[in-house]
Image (cartoon, one colour):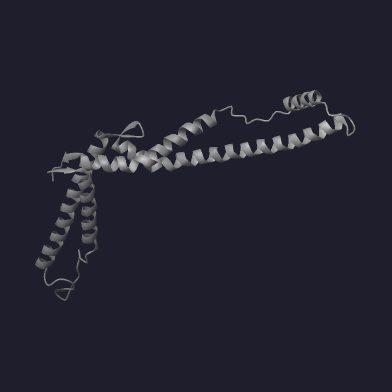
Length: 207
């Protein structure tokens, strides 16, 4: 029969529910014979029918479920979709979604460290400006008339000698900017893209 991947996913869930229901049934696969009588069954013939029926039902459900799963696996490895400008097979997209938390953890760590570094730079610069003010007052003296040119020279020399910056020798900021945008685009589009491709892709399933 030909069905969509969305329907196929639902059939797999339904088959698993049926298997679970069957497994929860109180069927005695073994019985005890005492004084010529079985404890749970009227006769061995009744036991044979009940056990064989139960086992066959479970086996049939498993075969059907596995046929659905194999068809889905094949389709997921062959069907492609585009998410945030990148092409994936369905299997690749699902795999990326499953492990994306690790990439998110990395970007969060880098972003936190970069923000901390920016804050430290700002704090040092604020402290340096305070020191510069003290230096200018000490250099010019209270009674001396303020000379803008001299103030500019002192300020330039001080700032040149006390530059503060973030060192990014490994290119972490560039990686961060690219990766954050990539992950955001992927997370914003993956669920819709999977739903869309699953709904419109139909495959032949033999059961």
